Each structure stands twice: as structure tokens, then as C-alpha cells.
Length: 409
Image: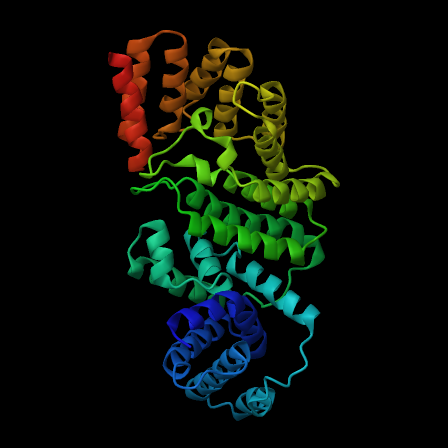
């Protein structure tokens, strides 16, 4: 067994191992450190002596590392004896596994990693590290930040959790739904960065998006009665279904009206619609409404045949339950398709007057498109050039500049 085997087992089992170790030790930071040390040990040991039960081997090794850490950190022999007793002579292969306990542990790990005391950046980094099993290098590569930055976020996050005395447990029922929103928000941030990269030379970072989908599936299995969990999963599946058609052979963006819809992932569409049906059974929240918009696109054979009136209504509903300037901007795009660019331009100009999206390239992008459709070419070109200057993603910037150049001819 080589490095790839160790990484595969860790990616699948990391959440369960770290969660069980946290319950075992009562120390989130120690548990994560011990698990990482076990992985390092596996990279050396497994090529020489492949274990019969790789997940059990990692759990046993991590427990040993945790006990060693406790021995080094404290002289409280009773605590060490308690941990040593829990090791049960390394008999992990023969342990009785309680699936309900495992599920609760993994769910609790998600809540801890996304705890409100953490900064948004720390929540994302910890979730990808301890729940998804990504390395610091993988996280850094996904978000185009230096590895030491990611490592610092993870270290600060673990110290914050320890200093705040965050317990390793499921939140009380009265708090769980509110806290669940924070978990969903983190997964959505991870997915959106994967589906439209904010910077760099690639439009998509599919590995990051698919990791968010995997975590959303895990959460949906652990919280089957929460409609917004299914709503988020539906949104991610339906959005990812368009990935195969969103870029050309050279990685350049392919806009919706130019996409070959035969290349869409219809298996992902079916999974998304199934998740949306579960969300709809209890009423759609913000993620469910966005998924319903994505489903409307998925059902249409072309941009022209899309039910834009329905999309406008869904954006209006979304604006009532989760108002935001981005929702208004997207509503303007839908209004332009349903009723014409003049009415949509009034919505965009109102956003500009309110200064609700300062510095965003999205506003001049949409405004430029609307002005072009109205025949106001010089103004449209100026807006698209402004959007290009504000856009940090090189692929998107190239599309904006190409459109601006076309308006000059």
C-alpha cells in the first residue's frame, strides 16, 4: 500500500476518526493532531506491512498518539489511566461499533468545526481539514493562498475552540437549527469557490466543489428531517451538473446560452431533483429556492425556452426570505430575459445608487450586458472594461475584455 492508499483511506475515514478521538480525549485540537500523526506513521508503515483493517489501524495508532500526548502534557495519572483503559489493548478490529454514536460524533464534529466563535476563514479551513480530510497543501492550492496561511488558520481555530471551552457535543435542540445554518453556510462557501473561482487562472475548481457535495451528502444523511440540508444538496448537484459544459477544451468559460446541454451531467440532475423533492416536502428555504431556480434551468432545452417568468417569481421569493444585493442582481438578469433589458436596468441602477455591492465586478458586468442589448454600445463597453478591471479571475476577465472589444467594432 502506498501514499495514494493512505490518502484514500484518510479521506473516507477522517471525520469518523477525528470525531471519535475528540469524544475519547475531550480535546478537539489534540484529537486532530493525533490523527495527523497517525497518518504520517501510516505513510511509513503501510508500504512495508499493509494492515488488514486500514481504518482500524489508523484509529488505534491515533489513540496511541493521543495517550502519548496526554502523558507528555499532564501528570494527572488518573486521566492517563482512563485513556489507557479506553484503548482496550488496541483491539480496534474487534470493537463493537455503534452506528448511531458514529453518526452523532461526525455531526458534532461538523458543528464544532463551524462554531460561531471561529472566523469564517477558520471555519472553512477546519471543515476541510478535519471533516473532509484535506491536507493544508490541498486547501491552500484550492483557495490560492500560502500553505502557512492555511496552517495558521487551522492552528488559531483549534486554539480558539479550546480557549472558548467549546464542548464536543451536539447543540441542544433549541439551538441546533440556528447553528445548522452556520454549517450550511460553510459548505456553500466551499462549493461556490469551487463552482466559480474568485481568483486565479481557472474558472472551476471541481475538486473543491465535489468535496462540498460529499460533505452535503453526509450532512443530509445525518439530518434527514432538515429541508434546507436537502435544499443545499440539491443546489450543489444541479449547479455541478453544468460543469462539463461550462468550459471549453482550453479552459475558457462557455456562457449559458452557448453551452451544449447534451454535455450536462443528467445523473447529477436526477440526484438534485430528488433532493429538491425532499426539501419541498417541508417548504423551501433560501437554499431550496435557489435549487428550484437551478432546476428550472435544468428542465429547459435552451435559454430561449427557459421559463423566465417562473425564475423571476422564485428570485422575488428568495429576496423576501433572504434579501441580498446579489439576489437582486440575479433577479435583474431574469427580469431582462422575461420582460426586457430596460426594466432590468432600473433594478441595477437602484443597486448602484444604494452602493450595496461596492468593488464587485458583477454589477458592471450585468449593466454592460443590459446596455449592449439596449444599443448603448459606448456605455456598455465602458461598463465591461470596468468589470474586467475589477475581476480577479483571469478566465472571466478574458471573456469581459472580448465582449468589450466586440462592442468597439
